[in-house]
Amino acid sequence: MNEYLDPELVLPTFAVMAVAFLAISFVIILWVKPIPNKLLLLGLLMAVASVGFGAFLPAMRTAAVILLTLAVVCILAGIVCILISHIVGSIRSCNETKAES
Image 1 (tube, rainbow, N blue to C red):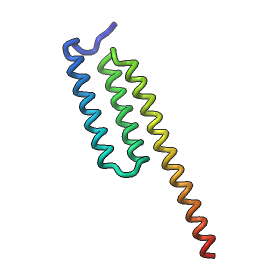
Image 2 (image 1 turned 45 degrees about the vertical axis):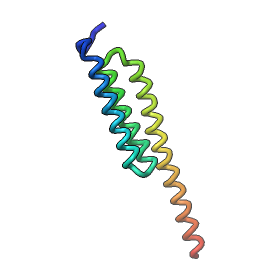
Image 3 (image 1 turned 180 degrees about the vertical axis):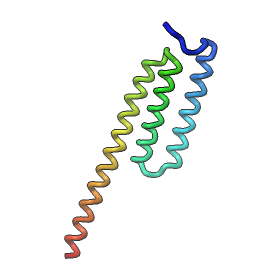
């Protein structure tokens, strides 16, 4: 099997990537207020992390696929939340204009 990194660098690389992922996730959760935006940003972060894990650490390919699947679910959930809020907003505005007439 082809190895991309020196075996001695695999664990430190994984540790740095994991700590960076957790730190950025924590910042997103604390500072971003709307839930759909949190879901979209966390999904994008998971997608980037999964590509990093899969590209730099060949032994992490299975974990990278799982993380990428979770990223797709988070992104789709964020899109659904945005669409639902848009539909509810348009229904409310339609009802308000009917009530004024």
